Amino acid sequence: MAATSANSQSAQLVKSHLAQVFAQYPIEVAHGDGVWLHARDGRKILDFYGGHAVAGLGYGHPRWLAALERQARQMAFQTNALPMVIRERAAARLVKFAGLGLNTVFWINSGAEANENALKLAFKITGRSKAVALEQGWHGRTAAAGAVTWGALEKWYGFPRTPFDVSFAPRDNPAAVERFVDKHTAAVIVEPVQGVGGAYGIGKPMLQALKARCDDVGAVLIFDEVQCGMGRTGAPFAANYYGVTPDIITAAKALGNGFPVSAVLLSKRVADSIKYDDMGTTFGGGPMACAVAEAVIDTIESESLLANVRQVSTYIRSNCVIGPITGTQGAGFLLGLKTSRPAKEIQAALLEKNILTGTSGDAHVLRLLPAYILNEGHVDQLRDALSTIPA
Ligand SMILES: Cc1ncc(COP(=O)(O)O)c(C=O)c1O
Image (cartoon, rainbow, N blue to C red; front, side, top):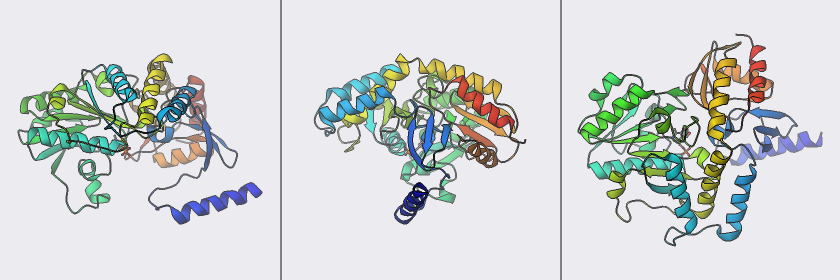
């Protein structure tokens, strides 16, 4: 009883002091371990949502904790004006992990900031005035990132105007690319596997068409891999997964496994154009952020997590088309389960059975973004739960 009253008091505190901008799930998380969330009311919840694609290693991974503690004791923060080995070492580690020849890294803090800087570089390099994004794409809530986010202007953008002109191309029509991307285009920004858009794989033909057209007209191709990168497709990046290399990749979310860090990976052409002061940040490239990014990559590689993502993703696809699930889309652990009735209803029914999943911009897609350590036994629990939910 005392616990219940403490719960309602803390819920009250949350309501009175936080900006009310997030719809709230009916779970108050007390702690987590691995793929499990422990709610304050005693429930143990299997997490297929991963803190919105952030917890790639799961909660409390010992290597991640050790890296944080080690770096915090050694030097918790230092400005970019003072060189530090960890900053260089983590950048080299990220470049090697990607293996795409994007050999220069700019560290920053969040997905939106990474995209903001990527877009700025594209405009500076080309001296042009226009960006192209894809319908249903999501790139963040800052001025430039919001401008290229589908539907933002109508729903929440807030600024009186966008900083540049944007057109939105259909996400699945390679033949239309030429019409949208021309010699006035500075940047084309695309999530190779859309997250908010419904765990929807853009596919190789579309990405190849964008790449070819950008090369033809001299536009900068940006892959926003904030959600689909850092191993989530079962490859280091979706660029590896599809075999298409852009000029710039942005990464965040699983890169820090919960510690705020993002990165902009640059091709030689882009990197060669940068001058001192073109970009900057206080916290980006902080030693703790770099130490966790390095630990995340080490862990993905030493625990063969990419192979696990591929194997367990296949297992989900072949076992979870059951009950209200009619099909799957997406890649790796950015999977969409297509639903016969509104995904929100299926999400609520699963939560009743202590399984947390996500929804998306597509009302009939349930989004799975689990930790890379998820195993087939966990999927069996999801399958069994789905099989009891009416179609
Ligand atoms: C593909 C993509 N890009 C950018 C962002 C923005 O990232 P952040 O919230 O860290 O600014 C998100 C966040 O969900 C995202 O999914």
